[in-house]
Amino acid sequence: MNFTTRLEIEHACTRCAIDYSHKVDFGDFEGFANLFAENGVLSVGSLHLDSRANIGKAMSQRPAEILSRHVITNIAINVIDEEAAVGMAYFMLYRTIVGNENDPTAVPPVAVVGHYKDKFEKTTDGWKFAERIGVFDMIDTSQFG
Image 1 (cartoon, rainbow, N blue to C red):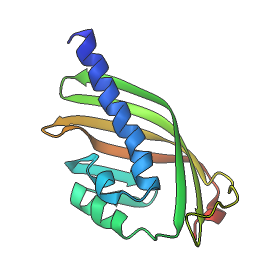
Image 2 (image 1 turned 180 degrees about the vertical axis):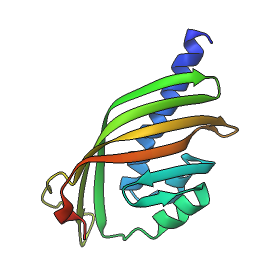
Image 3 (image 1 turned 135 degrees about the vertical axis):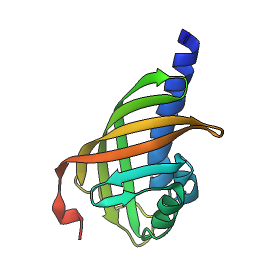
Image 4 (image 1 turned 90 degrees about the vertical axis):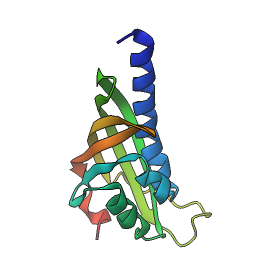
């Protein structure tokens, strides 16, 4: 594989990891689900979803009053071949309950610090998550009820 192809794959997978945060944080749950391959897996905490359809269905039930911000850093993508890649990223999750998302709220403490373990696959629609596993390394349990 040439250098340019490797960079294009790394960029596409990095973009997928970044878009994950934007789409969930701003309520684009259809777009969020479309980041996953048809048989993609999302496993975060006690949540385990095993298809794009199930991911979309679960996310559409997320309460509107939850305001979250996923801060993603240290994204590392390792290209396996022209059809597969793996990656890892650190995350910090801020979350709170708000009455009106247009009114600023006080910054809550970090709810979770963890990392994602990712598998990506090339599909006819571009690079998608084949699997995203979120590992909670530190958690403030008082923010989850």
